[in-house]
Length: 604
Image 1 (cartoon, helix red, strand yellow):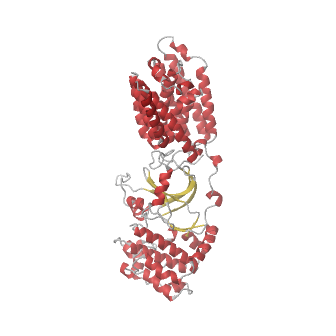
Image 2 (spheres, rainbow, N blue to C red; image 1 turned 45 degrees about the vertical axis):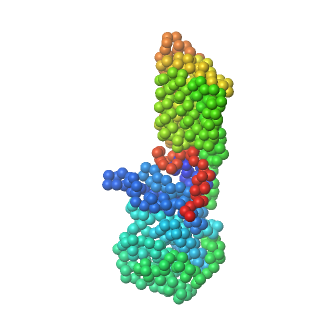
Image 3 (cartoon, rainbow, N blue to C red; image 1 turned 90 degrees about the vertical axis):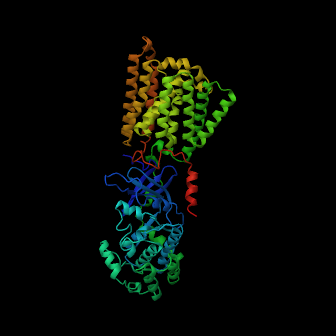
C-alpha cells in the first residue's frame, strides 16, 4: 500500500529516529520538490483527555521556528493537527554528534572540537540575541552534514516537551542541565552556556561526568560533584582548557562566563583549526550517516500517482491558468443574466481571470457566487438556493484550503464536452475526503447539467456544446430549458448520483492502493448507473422517460469509467495522514515565493 501523506503534503521516505521530542521522519515535500525532516510531538491533554487549546511552550516553539542562521536547522513550517505538533525542517544529510561520539568511542580531535564548539556558540549567540533559549543543548541536537556543515536543532522545544511529558526533566536532558534547570528555577542564557560547556567536556574527553539515571541522582551530582579536569581524560589538553571548561560548568550562573560568546572566545584559541576540523567531520559524517544514500535521493516517481505528480510548481502554474479561465467564464455567464452592458461584463470577467490566476480559490469562489446570482436572476429559486448553499459550504470547508479542490468541480462542463462528464465525481472521490468529494461532485454535477441545458441537450443532460464557452450568454437564454429540466424529479435523482458516487469512490480510494481505487471506479460507476435507472423509472411527466433511454448515457458513463480507471492505474492518491489537519492542503493557495521570502527573512 502506498504511504499516506503527512499534512496532505509530505510523503514519508524513512524513519530517522525517535527521541525525547517524539519521532523524526524523512519525507518528500510534494509542493517544493525537496526532502525535509519532520519532527512530530503529541500535544498535551487536559484532565478530560482533550488536547489543550494553547499548550505551554507552543508559542515559544513557534517563535524559535523563525530563527534563520547558517548554524541553525531551518524550520520551514510549524503546524498542528488534532493531537500533534509538526516541525517541518530542512533535512541535514549526515549524522548527529551523538551518533558520531558513540561510534568513535574516543574524544574528537582539537580541530574537530573547535569546529563543533564554534558553530554551536554562533547558533546560541544568535538565538539569545533574538530572545530564544535552547534549554536542551546536547550531542543529539547537533547535526553534522556530509558536506561539512554543523547545525543545531530543536530550538524552543524544551517548554513544549515538558508540557507533553516527553522531557526528562524541566524540558532538558539529564547530563546537560545545570542545577537551576533541574530545580525548576528561572533559566537564562547562562543555562545554555552550562550545557555547551558540558557538551564541550564530552567532545574533549569522550565522557560526560554529569550523566544520571534520574532527576534526583542528577541533582545530587550537581550539588556535590567536582568534575575532574578534562585533561584527566585527555592528557593532550592544556591547563588553560581545564580552567575554561570548568568555569563554564560553574554551579551557579554567576560563576560562569557572562555569555556563550565569552566562553567560546576564551576556549577556541586553545583548540585547533576549525576549518580542518570541518573537513574531518564531513568525512566522519559520510562514514557514520544512518541514512542510505539511495533513500536520501529524490523519490522514485514511478511509485507516485498522476495527481501527486501535479503537486509541484509546474502543476500549480497550470492550475492557475485553468482557474483564471474558469473564473472569467463563470463571472461572464452569471452576470449576463443581470442585463449588464458588454463593457462591465468584460471588466467583471477580467477581474475574475486576475483573481483566479493569482489566487485560484478566491477566483473560483467569486465566479461561483456570480453564477449563483445569475440563477436567481433567471428565477431558478430552488436550484439557485441549493447551488448557493453547496457553494458556500464547499468553499469554506474545502476550496479555500486547496486550489486543486477549488478547480476540480469546474471541470465538469469541460469533461461533458468530451462526453465523459461522470469522470468528475469519481475524480473528486479519488483525491478528496468523502464529505469534500461529495460537495465538489454536487457542484460539478449542477454546472454540467446547466451547461447541457444551455446547449439544448435533452435528458439525461450529459453532453455540452463546446460553442457554449465561446458564448456564455447562451446560459441566459437557457433559463426556460433549465426550469423545465429541474422541474422533473428525474433530474434531481440523476444529480444525486454525482455526490453519492463520489462518496463511494472516496471511501475506497482512502486505502491508498490501486486495487481499492479501481474497485471504487466500478462501484462508483454502479451508483451512477443505478440513479440513472431510478430517474428513468420515476421520470415525470408521463412519457418523459423515453428521453432517458438510448446509448448516450452508457457511452458517456463507459468513457468516464475508462478515463478514471487509467488515472487510478497510474497510482493511487497519497491522502492526508489525518483528515482535518491544519497547516497543509492539497495544493496550497499561498505563493511558495512568499513562503521562501519569510523563511529567508527570519528575525532581525
